[in-house]
Image (cartoon, rainbow, N blue to C red; front, side, top):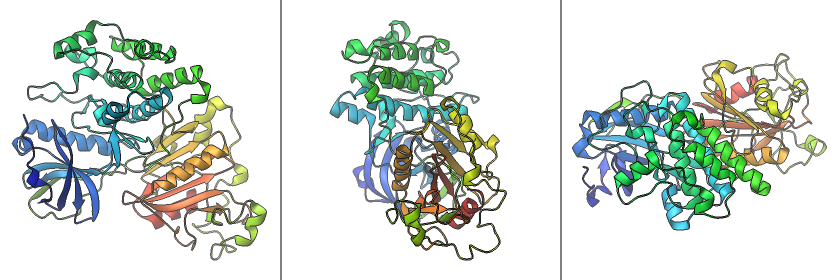
Amino acid sequence: MTEPVPRSRVGSQIGPYRLRRLLGKGGMGEVYEAEDTVRHRVVALKLLPEAVSHDPVFRARLQREAQAAGRLQEPHVVPIHDYGEIDGLLFVDMRLIDGTDLRTILRERGPMDPARATAVVRQVASALDAAHRAGILHRDVKPENILLNQDDFAYLVDFGIANAATDEALTQLGTAVGTYAYMAPERFGGGEVDHRADVYALTCVLYECLTGVAPFRGDSVSVVIAAHLNDPAPRPSVQRPGLPAGLDEVVARGLAKRPQDRYGSAGEMARAAADAVAAAWPSQAATVAAPLPPLSPLPPTPPGREAKGPMVAFLAAGAVIVLTLAGLGLWLLVRPGDATDATDATDSVAERPGADAAPTSGSRESHRRTRTESAPALPSDSAEEQLMSLLSEGHDSSNCQPVQPPAAGAVATVDCTQALTPTGPAFARYSIFDNRETLDAAFAGAVQVNSSLMQCPGSGIDSPTTWHYVDTPDQPVGQIACGTYNDNADVVWTNDENLLLVDAQGSDLEDLHNWWLQYG
């Protein structure tokens, strides 16, 4: 049992953190809005209670939470900056999300319309699938652990009880992990639990988003457990008449008693739900998902600060960073709005110094892919194959994996880890779209979430702007923007002909931009 944090802690300082206000508290401790006085940023600081900070089980949970989130290169996982121990308290320093938890939204506004519900669930499914690919189970998927920002971009939080499938389960200090209303039947039997338990939990969340109530309810824990074990899956269309009947089938399969009878992945379940809505109401296909935002995490960086007081850093977990999408780029042209076509743009070209000289690492060399050498269009059912053919030569395709479901509005998305060169992006996301309108909207969304925008190195032009190949200065190829996101350099660009969007993250903007010049 944890003790409430004294009110006097608000306004106090713990190590480098000045605690501004209490955001929430639960079984794993309290979360504060805090100012990091060393790095001069506002963060969400999670503190474990003093009574359990020295408990080896809780320490293991904290370490696992930070390691799990730091390993996940996925935009829908809350970025973790650091974790360790300060003044005898275990802490996790996380990105402060300006949003509201799904529980509060459902309580205050009631059930969601089906398109919105499936859009939210698809985003959470993307986070879960990334975790499952890494061998991590969340084990506590519930509305309280899903945050939505004002654009309905979803974050899955609290990996404090997540544990890798290959590890021993943690001792539970006398209480069950997770919340009973969302726990799969196998969680109560002591048998093997795999990723399909998270699929079950997410289906419970889907049902609640659609109807406003949990699928299995009761006035005691034993009644709820018995319902999970024995009762048939409830039909959303019965609880809330008017919902598409196809959602009944999705919920029934997602809540199957036997794991092998469920969907094989969270993404598969989420896509089935979206398809059911689209089939019933084509005009309401689930496209509500947030504008492309912080995508994924960079690798861990060593702790580089000194705390005011004893501080032991277990590990500086990598910041989970922004969304990343890819294109083929080279130089900058004109500010958006300065020209509406290639002819108008001619007089506004911002030439790269020495552009008529021999190609350098900052020029499009003959062996680089050019606009006229783009991969031929492939059938729509080969969207992932087409996207893989458009990957930059600066990435090894073996380090790139398709994302399911794709980013909002995209027909295919691929995430890549560290580029071939050490100064290249630590993470990049490539996405292709089916029309220019959705491509431009995705670019605008990606630019909007940057912490700051700035001129791309050497350009002399504010971001965002357009870019062109050196040998065709009067032909804009796409848009580009340079900036920072969560203290990391960010370059996002498009290739209009290929309907391609790329967002790349790195530690140094000049290095990242030079990589784009050479390989983008």
